[in-house]
Amino acid sequence: MQPPIFNWPALSASERCAALQRPAQQEAQSLQQRVREIIRDVRTRGDEAVLEYTRRFDCPSLDALEVGPAEFVAAQRTLNADQRAALDRAISNVRRFHEAQRSEPMIVHTSPGVVCERHDRAIDAVGLYVPAGVAPLPSTAIMVAVPAQIAGCRTRIMCTPPRRDGLADPAVLTVARLCGIERVFKVGGAQAVAAMAYGTAAIPKVDKVFG
Figure (cartoon, rainbow, N blue to C red):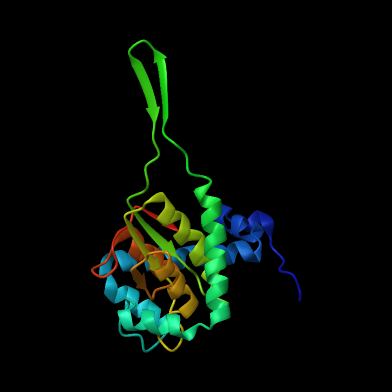
């Protein structure tokens, strides 16, 4: 492919900047702009925008954003004994690691009558994002759900993209239930993060998003 030829003295400052960018940088800027547009749209239109993007990118026939009780039950029945055992083992290993990270309150008497203390407090509400672009990632679900449970975060919600059939990945849903997460939403991408960050009628606003 013939490389482009630029008349450098004739270029404006912005044109010179664009000429020096690698194609990947140009693509990244375009992607960032698209993400900003999605975030603004979700902030403005809420669930309507979230559902629209989810139908466009993931499942054209999706009707409900939140996973219902029947889907949770069906997901756990879908997994065979070996798959369930693998999830249980992975959760146990991750739990053991993060339990070891817990710290006790620190109390120091710095001088007579003066006491300094340090206490760890859990973030009250967290959003857990589990991607499923190339393939579903129950491992990510484990690595964000287990520490959130151990920390004692009172509100824990999860977002993960639906499959083309409108269902969430059964392994991800099983992990959610095993880690005490009751609310999972079938939403992916920037629209999921925006919904958790700003809140919609269906998806609660959280204090921090992990994924």
